[in-house]
Image (tube, rainbow, N blue to C red; front, side, top):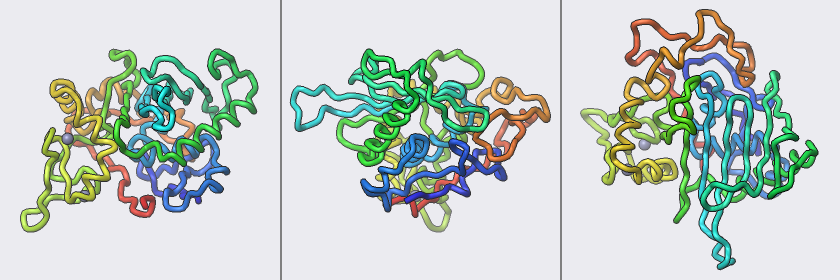
Length: 317
Ligand SMILES: [Zn+2]
Ligand SMILES: [Zn+2]
């Protein structure tokens, strides 16, 4: 059932293997999961599975503590058809620094009905936070109960394929640019543009490049900010692109402007790449200690950004 993401890397760290919860980074392959296999899911693997299958860069951002101070992934789900009185709800996966918060909220995304909190220890292990977890109005102060509820929560998400597009299902992703805080709760961002700029000569899904002789890419007819080599690639990206495509033109324009230097991460390198030369990263998700990214003086354009491995046919059905 497991799929170890041995080749998965954070951009700028081509040699650094990644861990999750102190173990080699693993997600569940959508090809093989069954209620039986999801029963074995741990909370960290479940969360990584959801983020990875929505878009691999979302998982990269989640693990990339040096670059993003906080991030939030939400999905709002319509009311259950079987229950006319239900009002729908939303699901949230978030990280602020090394603290992870997951749970369910009301349809407006304001009131938590379940909130589970974990802290990444220095070893990368997720430790249940017994001071900030709740079911309804009740505090949960038992670490084992938090672990059990976490497993139940991720199992439902994975079995329900909560990362998939669907009618009235809306996914959104926000990041807060480390270590500054000019946006408060962060800004809505496409995972495509976290680590690289929009390039309409490249398929937004599979990265196939437009060539003079052969392949011609088609742009999204509605917004023009995505390009695809095939209908299949367009379909696969819809779960991510839907939220961007429906945005206000000015808001999307701002998003494109601040990501044009090579993704949001290069927007203002004096703010994000503040490490001193040789300063160690405290990111517990690196299997071996790494140095923080350092700003390359004078080279702001298109520094060598390693692209995220998105070619993952095996993980799809
Ligand atoms: Zn493609
Ligand atoms: Zn579009």
